[in-house]
Image (cartoon, rainbow, N blue to C red):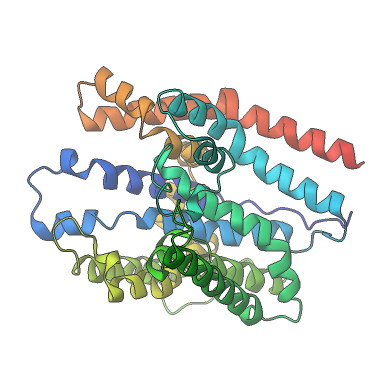
Length: 366
């Protein structure tokens, strides 16, 4: 196996995961947190699904940064890579999946789509079961395709793999649309471009490719430790400013229960331009010393960031309901209790199992 370069740890990026997960919590509980919010604020909070976009840009960066020089030339090495990635997702997803589905009755094909995390490709079921796990389908699609994308970018440009991702999405949507027209699409496989753009890797590829581009740039800059900028924190605050500006512009398209992202210009701003703000922010957090990077790099925020996947999976459903009952639906206390529970799950279950899987996979290849 080709040796990987030393894995660099960017603590502020781990802390940022806490912020992203907390944004999703605010989105789902906004009516209880701000019951009397003015319309503009309610609309803005309704776009806090952008916490997911932060996760996707981060994933594009981290996977590329870690595996860009990995040797994928054999089935065993590709399988080892996938097993390690699945070891990060499945040990916690499976218990949550079993708990949710113990209270639901699904047809066998439907259950199969949930168990295999293919449900995110199917419009009629992607928000059922473990509701938020549609994003895991997006992540897994990227994991599966990443080695191919690296190969397509072997000449130093991400344009070819980006075009490949977009064309694949168009072709699959055409297939889904055709099946729907013929009446042979019972679960709604990628039936229209709006669904593809909102809910699949192919529609949200820009988020991953911005992260990938950032990783390629950093890999090309040997021994980069500092950057020159007009003012201290230029990239950090430019990224933050662009992010919030775009978030506000997207929110202006909200109408009643319809979020701004469901408008054509909201979707355009979200999918094509918002990732650029996130990319600037990531770059600044890695290489600029600001108050924000110092907070996100603290031990507490690193721990919270590491527990963010558990929090993301648990904040809805039975765990969220139990936390609400224990705190009498006082959302600030519910928020804190869920984070405490998520940290415990991460330390006792998620982290040890992931480490064990990595050791076993690496031992099998040695």
